[in-house]
Length: 159
Image 1 (tube, rainbow, N blue to C red):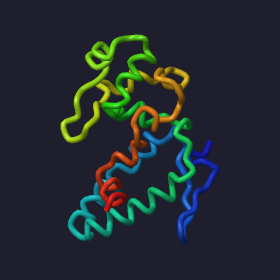
Image 2: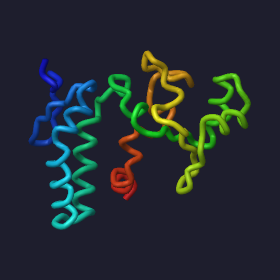
Image 3: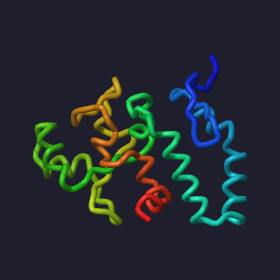
Image 4: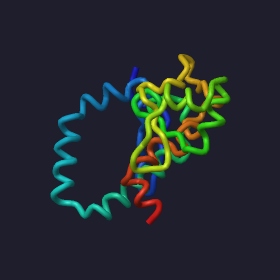
């Protein structure tokens, strides 16, 4: 089976094949040395603001119609981010006190007004890919998709 998904995504002047979600990790490992060399080159030769803007535009094109429920890599590989205002509701969803919810599942993020999940994969990820906190959208848990939590993307979207 081809490791690239059969669906294609287009961005202005380009067409991109997506890697099937179950093959992302192995495909990334195959390109690890090449990717590191490229990142090293960019650090010394690219204008960071222009590069971040280009990255944000490409990201927007690639993920505009992406359904988070397809792979759940964000829930498996990163800490979820829960805004302060969601904690009471999420604790109630699990039938526990807000204090127990925070103590058992969360750690304070120092740079933002939100909390991060303590573990990866996320404690709220069910084996079937759904979320224990209700719904199946990563945005429900994180407030933003994990892609938008990247400081380079966030900086260009707010600038």
